[in-house]
Length: 119
Image (cartoon, rainbow, N blue to C red; front, top):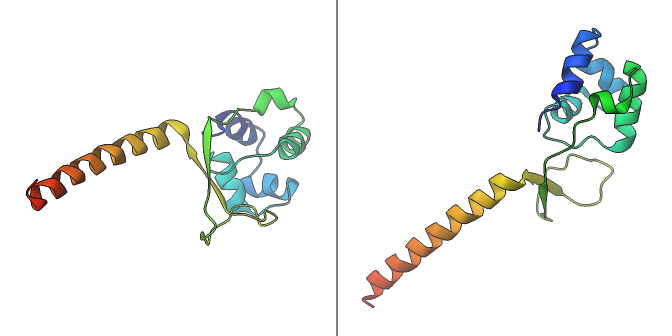
């Protein structure tokens, strides 16, 4: 979920994404993903950003949507260099919808296999 309150206030105060990235000691591309909602902003980062923008955390904080965490030990991409595992989060509603679609497709494939086997 995009951090709209944070983005609007940052722009209103005239700060760039690079300046906020410097405050939380990350690169601008990672901060851009955080502001875009693709990467989670941790509690300590919310505090640093709010302090820098001189506002209470509540004024910029937006809770992340419910997420499903998938641990993929073969992944080559990791958003958190300090993390020991490769964790990707997906929007919960989207994940459920994808699972339902895949289950439907599996059902269709099973029917096709039965037809091909002549059952």
